[in-house]
Image (cartoon, rainbow, N blue to C red; front, side):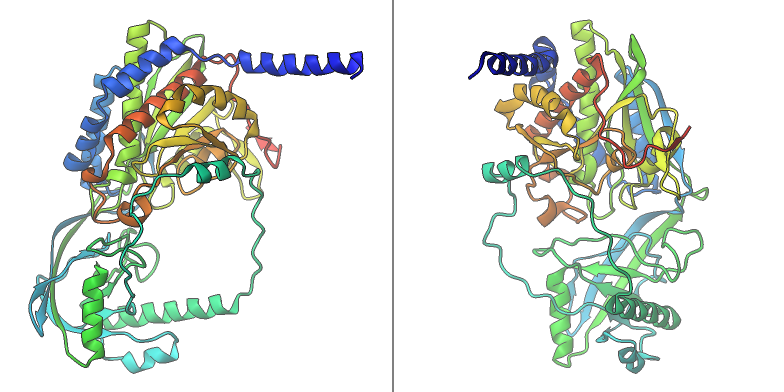
Length: 525
């Protein structure tokens, strides 16, 4: 090797070493964070309040309002400032289930496992009628059912075969899976789909014709079963309306019920044998929230020399209605509230205040399409207008990062970088102190479906943490089994500890986290 080449290599190595050394990791602060996050945790106490006491938290419901009041009080009690509600909307009417029962009356009696869909209206007391299976897949098939649905319960799904579970329901990420994620290349933009899909158009025409017939004949209720779930687990979301959304004020909505697959299949088989089946159902539900407006929860710890800059962390606070919203997303909300508590305790014990302002956000309306965080981002952060131009909000340049948690109870295994390779070396330094807790992986991959997208989509660094799946997708996500009992205490403690450290170290850097380049540089202020 020539002397000049040797010196050049030494220079590059020196620069790389210096660059890595410049990323400060405060070991004494991490020790304090670990003490409060692992040894003196209160995360399960918080989770129990969110779920057992204030669950479920359907957006627009009176219970969500009660949970919101509790969360604000808790943040104030911990010493947070600027605790306030961020209004967004209009969302539409709220909904609360007051009473429900469903029974098979003939050919024999048995209680049925089922749940009304959100925003399903009340029945006229207890109603009783025969069941009819609507065996149709085309507009022409519907003709034979005209005039036959009134006063009936209409089953709209076919039988679903169930296979016994041979693999465990709860799974953690394996070393091989984590390695694959770490080795994944930067994500590529999705290709646009071509238009003119004839099958899609045909399917849409059928759905429209089916909806028109159902609302014309007004059966007692429609009954379906979800595409997954067994052993009494029922996955339930919202009812459909004749027009628009079922939550829209004045929308016409039929009573709609989702039944456990075992009970659905039993009735289906009896009907296939020519045996008439009679059901009785009673739904008592109330609509509320007349002004249609909803609220996110915001609170802060003011910064010092960089107080005009912000580090955000958050999770969605709303849930669906059949469980108590534990893994989706009481877990994330409890972790972020615990993160807030840990940060305050760390400040008290160390005597060191954050340089940047720390801001927690608990979002609502996530389940209906990231509505709360998108509204916040449009007002405060930024959005893309109809021409694809970035319109910057007042906090666009001020936010260093937003950290989110919303994939169940599983422990943190690393971070999705959302294609932002520039933060890799920074996050690597911040993850290293938590190797013993199983958090080691950085992947350039994107992940979607939750509130970090409201920030990442406009170029502000927004991150979701990699988590063990546990039984999130197989058993608890949007189901009647989404309850406190399926939360894993050690995993939530670990998550809150790691996030608290990430938030703290982001607040103390001389520079904000680097941003990935945006597709367009055109912006309006």
